[in-house]
Each structure stands twice: as C-alpha cells, then as structure tokens.
Length: 167
Image (tube, rainbow, N blue to C red):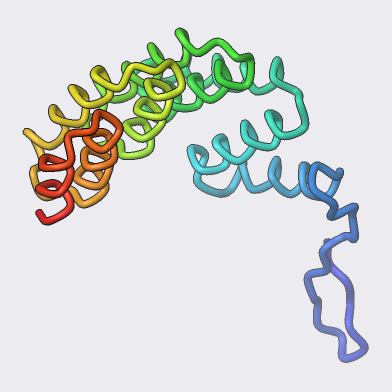
C-alpha cells in the first residue's frame, strides 16, 4: 500500500494487522512472503504455525501439496515427519525422517529428529547405528559426535562416550 507524503513522494505503508502469534497479520504476511520469498523456508514456517495452532490437517495438506510438486524434497519429508509427530504417530514420523535422510544424508535436522524419535521409542541401539552411519560418512560432525557420546552414556559405555566427546 502506498501513501503520499506532503512533499508529493510516495511511501510504502504496511497495514496494521493483528501481530499476535497465529493472528491474522502473521498469517497474511506469511502468505504474501510465500509469493515473493523463499518458498521452502516459508512453507516450513507455515507448517509450524499450523501445528502450533493445532491445525494439523492444514499442515498435512500443505506438506502433501509440496510433496506432489517435489516428491524428492528432503525438507518436505522432514515436515511430513513433524506433522506425524503432532498426530502422535511415531512410527510414521520415523519413516518420514528416515526418508528425508535417504534423500539428503546431510540433512542435520532430519537426523536429529530421527534420533529423537528413536529415543522416544526407546530404540537406543537403532539411534546409535544411525549415528554411526552419519559418522562413517562425516567423521568430524560435532553434533553427531555429541549425540553418539550421549547414546553411549545411555548404554553405560562410558569409555566410548569419552572417546566421542574427545574427538
């Protein structure tokens, strides 16, 4: 929207909308930014807002639309996993995070979400196996080394935990 100043020049004026979390202003700005900004980042924000507002069906629909457009999107699989977590479907979330990693093995957020899912399901050995796979490909990844150390601690293998921390 433009407003004319006293000197005759135009100035951009942003309409004042409700700026509370989930308010109309937040959602309208996000929709406008989706048209002009980075679609992937904005999709992620919109899905997160939908989940926070307990509009999980809307979040799922956004993710399904994105997956129809870009079925090989690691981010879309990550978001699908988050939707499944919001639905308390841990098995489907695990599968979605695993697929996100298959599509992009360097997707750190998918890796961390998958490990958290394994831990929630008390699958410490599976989490450790996945972490070792990441470390085999990227041995100097600090976050994976920290996760490995924590997993070794959970297994009471303090020597390996110490080794992971010291790398």
